[in-house]
Length: 203
Image (cartoon, rainbow, N blue to C red):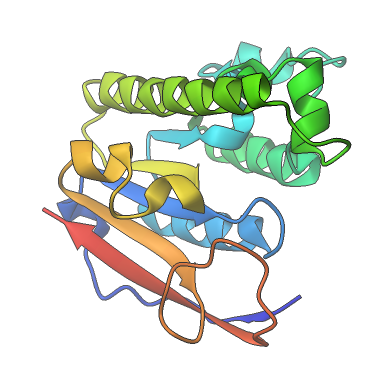
């Protein structure tokens, strides 16, 4: 596991509507950074892609998560740690994605590398990706109206590239992301031993 630097943003989090934390989906210790930032911001809401469509906005819902709920295509241990953190801190934890990210069993096999996609499946994947991005945006905008504090949003790094729908559609945000030796957002595993967390803002 590459080394990670402690982040010192130099920013007052309260100046922003949204604090985005890039999630690498498991090739870094994502939860460590999430815990650090959530502790500093102390938000009312944490929105998380990896939680899919699960909404935990009350003690009862935290306590009644179905035992058979399976988080397909996620780092389940990170999801469980995030749920426990928000439960202890009394923070509402909201999934901003589709159930199983909108992928049926056939597409899950493709995503897991079990086989190559057909041309029709490639087109379906692109369509679902666009649907997911629109869904992310709609949920974020919904909770923006509900919170007087900055909202922490844990989102796959790919969705936080500067030309993405989210980054182009929203304002007044801070993005916290791991970067490679060239300072570029880390979108895949790196052989670098030291990963530096960087920030990007839009006001």
